[in-house]
Length: 85
Length: 254
Image: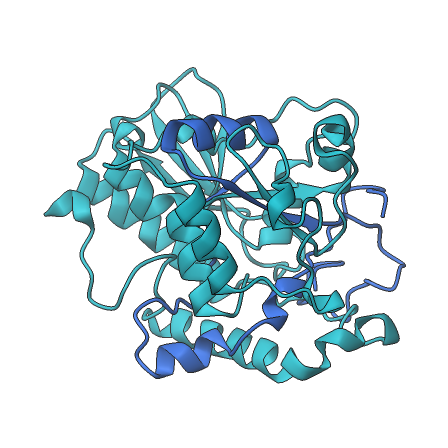
């Protein structure tokens, strides 16, 4: 899917695999954090390789897309950023 | 964001995360073999090459029922053990590049909108706090970090992207002087993050609400429930920042 502009589409497709963070926090799971993503995300492949080699940690990459407004990803209301799922 | 705590915990402990959009995928196409797909997940070795023994490019994709499991992540972590003791974090690994060639890399606004995170612009000389690995581990994941002008006072400007925000909200959330103690700088960053989170844009559900997004049907209630819980906790001031446990103190204050 081409990146056509500045409009973003966040795909949380990975979120399909599990129960809700809210429920986990309610259950007292100390690892459950709401509103935040614990992964240490780096911006680019070059930075990822630099950190990987310094720490010995492999890289986990996640594909996402930036798409324009007016597509199937278009926002539903003003309180939502365009395209972000 | 992964809604499985078991997956999230392993990714945060044992892996370097890389969000890769189509333009970045195209930039590294020769290295990767092809452009990774949206929502697809790939495990890469220390040189950034896809681990073929773990499925290569796009090995995992929940929408295609190729689900990344804790067992797979444990296997990778055992095969590629992290260095111990853990080397210190460097702020340079996390600075979002502002020099762009065409559409690559994505703009700061785009990534901040996508990730729904406030931006932390570092201005003036690099603050000592951002050379402290424990400080970074505690605060890095709250923001999209950007190197601003190296001139002037050393401070961290916290901003939000306009997309999806209420019109009356200011773009600038805080200007944190970097000359303060770790405790002062950290507390100011926490306040700024919480301010953003209180009014964080909702996820647009244009995708999940149409036929193309039917794969989301079984988690829609979790998605909206989490969003409401996040907003409620942020407004109550009880929302936990990334990677922190309830009642946990900042390690740099111990």
